Amino acid sequence: MLKTTGIIRKIDELGRIVIPKELRGVLGIKSGDSLSFLVDDGRIILEKYEAMDNLKDKSTHIISSVNDLVDAAIFISDNEKFLTKGILENKKLPPLFLDLLINRKNYLSKEIERMTFDDEILEGYFLAKCLIKDSNPIGILLLYKRSIPLEQDDLFAKIIKNIIENS
Image 1 (cartoon, helix red, strand yellow):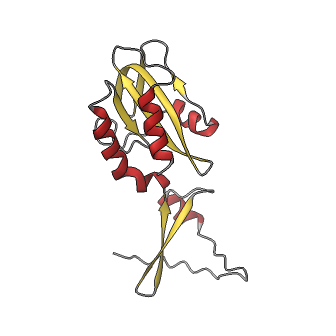
Image 2 (tube, one colour; image 1 turned 90 degrees about the vertical axis):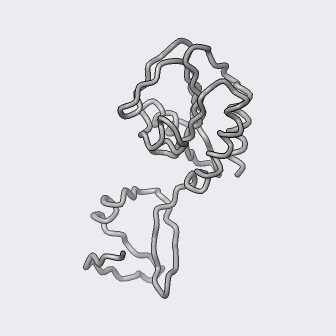
């Protein structure tokens, strides 16, 4: 259902319009975010666009196909939260992973670690790879094992990362 905000803005000579700070705050839109334009019965509707949203269903299919082959839990996130079904679904990225996105880095635990994802605590080995599409970080691919170390160049992580980045 559409709600009126009472806010009116003029379009400038270059066709630009300012989205009020209050609306950006309520909707979680930050500087640099992408917006998608929809048209409905003569109306223009703006939505926050996340590259990973388009991959959510695809990532679920990829993971269910690969889970039988690899002895690790696999999770995929966007730039804020985990998308894949399971114990980390909708959990926010911990600061370590946000830092990986900012610096476009990967992470490999050398020993058993404890990581907190909102209210969920996982203990084991972690391999996190920053996902990049069109030169922009779009999320994290996380492989998790309870008791067996992961390798830096885990073949399945490379395959999944390649599929997602080229989708």
